[in-house]
Length: 226
Image 1: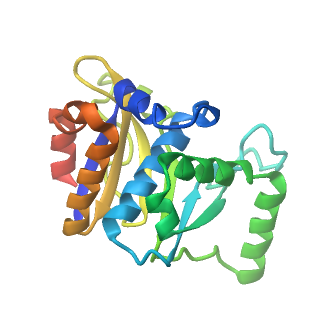
Image 2: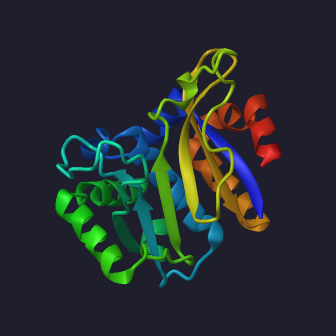
């Protein structure tokens, strides 16, 4: 398996948004990048076009919109995994906007009722639901957690976030380049042949921004350590 991390700056985000129809260009950076990673990953894995793949995202139950009455001294996880499904052929062959619309749908279906239902299921089963491995992809946004602002007395960190990942997970990390540009760094783990196809598809989507995406010294250093 290969580990690599990919950087998306303002230019890459702009190029990707330019590929969307007007009604989807108000999507969030998370929705845009998660859809891009999901689509490129699915193409790279070369699954059967008739197979079904699933996208899940982690949504916190601590959001102000949900009145979950979480105890003030509870510091454990309080998340749910809303999901959407697609046939491989549809995800790979439709325009990029198809993937973005599905990611937006997954987030939109998240509700207080969904969270309580998931909690009830875990109580009945005695454990959290297990994630399917084949065709499943889970993305979590850590870019706004504030890891990059932590100072333990040695100054701000060079990098703070999730450096590695498992085969079905990716995380969005806030990252600042040496020139001061701030963007998002996303690690992904794939079989070596699939990683090569993933890079090729991502380059195709980014088009003229491939130099910024793949020639960043800091990103290479992080990727090599994974």
